[in-house]
Structures are given as structure tokens and as C-alpha cells.
Length: 228
Image (cartoon, rainbow, N blue to C red; front, side, top):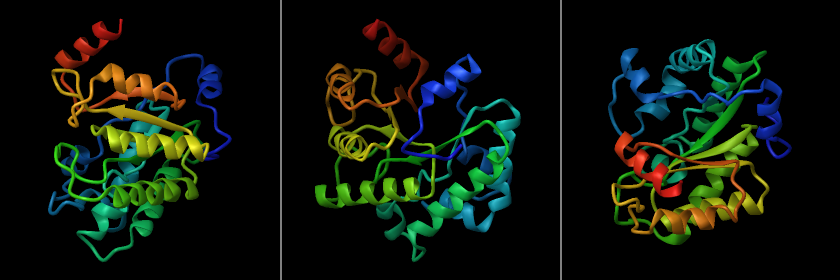
């Protein structure tokens, strides 16, 4: 598909007349295929060192019925890359998106550009400044947009300040986006805010959808019944 900015996920869903199926993990499948998890950027570097493996994983998800495949860009943001490597983050993003596009070529499949937290997903205390945080997400989202993902998937987000930066930017730039949250058993973000407070904010930023990831079935049930 790859026509970000004019994309409407709901039109696409109506055309196929059923719920859209998202792909699954990338990192664990890279490990299954023999890629060693050495260093914090091992998944990102696979886009350059083992592109055929990343491509094959995308293709296997498509063959299994996925309507949406996710770029291998969970760890390609500027903060993550610049602290660990001399490789330009733009090079990693471009390579990753191209692999997804190659796998999806000729298929009725959408490409979600993965945008993860700037720092570690489970980190409670912030180590970088707000200015660095803003610059990181703007640059990474811009790069995903430039390389023509269908929408940006902001996943495993657990800090309200970061969520606001991401959503405000996507909303202001008319970038189609999804937000997926990480919450604890108390149904709060790692930064402490209650899920209802967060959802109230998100609904005013028009995400394509709101989801949750890296949570237990028990926590998901608690979320479901609280919202219901």
C-alpha cells in the first residue's frame, strides 16, 4: 500500500470485510533463525547484516494471513542508535522499511512503521532531556513517513510525557498512527498515570486505534472489564 498521509485503515478494513490481522514478534523469530542477540542494536543491525532473514520473517507472516506487517525499526530511533553505533539511524530505517515493502509487493498488505520508546521499554526513570526526547521521536517518525509506511505504530509506550510528544506530533502532522500501551497490574503507566486518564487524552488525538502489548492475560482482562 505505502501511501502515508492519505491512508484510511477503516476503508481498507471495509474492503476485506473482517478484522485486520497484525503480524507477531520479530526478535524471537530472528533468534530462532540463528541471529545472535549481541548488543542492544542486534535486531536493528539485522536489517543490514541479515536482510534475507528479516525479509523471510515478513513473508512468513504474510503467508500466514497477516494484513499488516511491522517494520523492524523497534530499535532504530536516534537515541538508541547514536548511543551504540556509528551507523546512521536513517540507513537502518530505510533498509528496514524497504525489506517490508519488498515482502509486501503485490500483496494486499499494510506496512506499520514501528516507533518504540526512545530509551528502554521498562525504564522508570528518564535519562534524557525532554528536548532530546522530542527530537528523537520527530526525527524517527519523519523518517518512517519519508520511507512511505502506511502508518506509524507507536508500541510499548509506558510514559505519559513520551506518549504526549508522539501523539501531538503525529496529530499535528496528519500522520496516521496507532498507540499501544504498556501498563502494570494497577492499570497505570510506568510513569504513574491511570489508564483512564491516558485514554481520555488519547481519544482527543484521533489515533487509528489504541492497543496494549507486553502485558499478561490477567492484566488485559482487568483492562477489558474496567473499560467495559
